Figure (cartoon, rainbow, N blue to C red):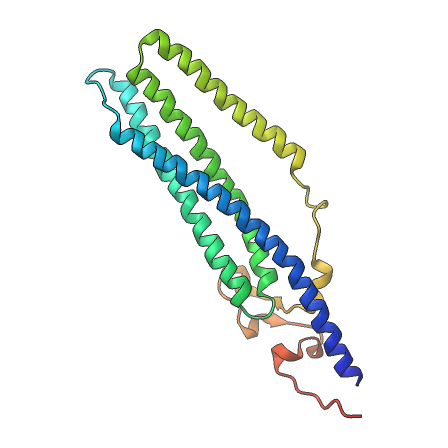
Length: 225
């Protein structure tokens, strides 16, 4: 009877813990989807503008800058879109269809990908503004191009400064985040296989007490008195 009650309690704690981590999973998916959508819009806008623009035969340096920023903007934004797609599709699949404990593993790994995705998005925004800066010198007269350049550079500085200010205001320190470490005792722990990026197997789970994971280890005990 006690063994059955222990198994029931463990299952309830697991279920509630998975529900909490699922909220994090949905948060990451919504954030990544928003970033990927904006990156795709910027890439499409840059590509369409470059195809339809008529470049004059002169102003070689301005055209060289335009080609550089257009290529950089499209490539970086496509990298951002691709990474968002990979992380949301494969990460969500790992969390929902993986082995016992995969939700905890997938959410932590998706969290570690945030810096790269947000970094490529920031570079894509600046590269898109660089396209506008170069196009101003290609298509406008010198006086108008100077005024436009001041506005574009001011926009770049404002975006960078505001991003740093908002990040400082809302960024969480490691000791301020909600930790689920105390709940990991009800999940199987990933061994060296998960650190190397490979898919965890049954041999990569370890525990101090085999009775903690009776479903994982297929341990059948006689619960009769």
